[in-house]
Image (cartoon, rainbow, N blue to C red; front, side, top):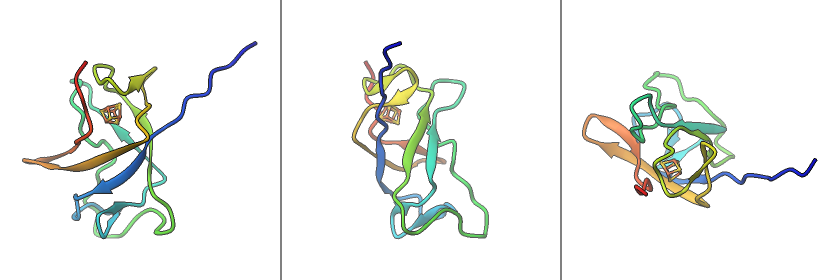
Length: 100
Ligand code: SF4
């Protein structure tokens, strides 16, 4: 059976400095999930815990993205080489989201 390998984007920058996974504008979760059930490109991994999470030696990848309306989305995976995440009002969103 022939298989198609999907590539996933990396989180180049994130300005949600209050997130447990964020250090110096970098996300250090192993992988993040983008999107909620309303098709809004929020960061579903954002966490306001007081402890720091993730691994400072890695740049987060996009593990999954539920936003099928984005031009970079294929099979609910992000195909952009990199994304930028940041606060928008009261929430934290994928700022690379581009509607089809
Ligand atoms: S760029 Fe589009 S497909 Fe990639 S994580 Fe952001 S919203 Fe999802």
